Length: 183
Image 1 (tube, helix red, strand yellow):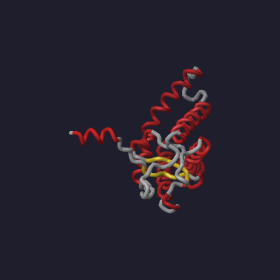
Image 2 (cartoon, one colour; image 1 turned 90 degrees about the vertical axis):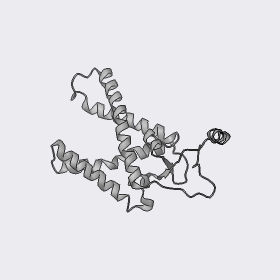
Image 3 (tube, one colour; image 1 turned 180 degrees about the horizontal axis):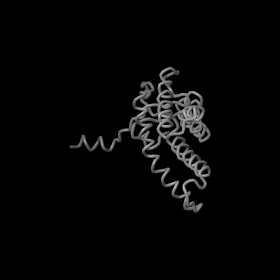
Image 4 (cartoon, one colour; image 1 turned 120 degrees about the vertical axis):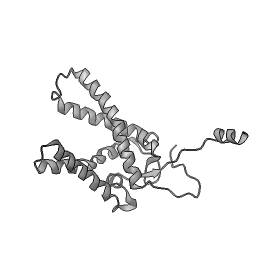
C-alpha cells in the first residue's frame, strides 16, 4: 500500500479543519492510555518514589515513546487509531506513504502546536495552571486557525515536512457486498 487508494478519476479529498480537530481531540484521549502505561512502566523500571523524582527523564522517555507511536503508525499505513476513526490519512506530497524519517520529522515538527504557547507563558511569567492552560489553548486555537491561511489549508508542520492529510474512506469488501446481493 504505497500510494493513495482512489478511483481513477477521483480527486484527492482533504478533510476539513473541524474533522481534523475532532481527530486531534480523540487522539489526545487515546494518548492518555499510552502515556499512563508508559509512565507506569518508567516509574516501575526506575523505582521512582516521588512524582518530581526523575521528572526530566520521564519527560524525555514519554517524548521518545510518543515519537515511536506516531512514527510507527504514520509510516505503516499513514493512520493512527484516531485517524482511522475519522477517515484521515497522512501521506507525502506525491500521495505516497511516509518513510520513518519523514514520520519522525512530522512528529518533531508537530510540537509547533504547543511550544510557542508554552514559551509565551514562560516569558510572561505565568505560573498558575489555569493561566498556562489558557495560554496553551489559545496557542492551539491560533495554530489551527493558521491552517486557514496556508496552502491547501494544511497545518504548518505538514507544509514544513512535505506531508498532507487526506480523506481515506474504508475500502468496501466485495464479500460483504456479494452477501447482501445474494439475499
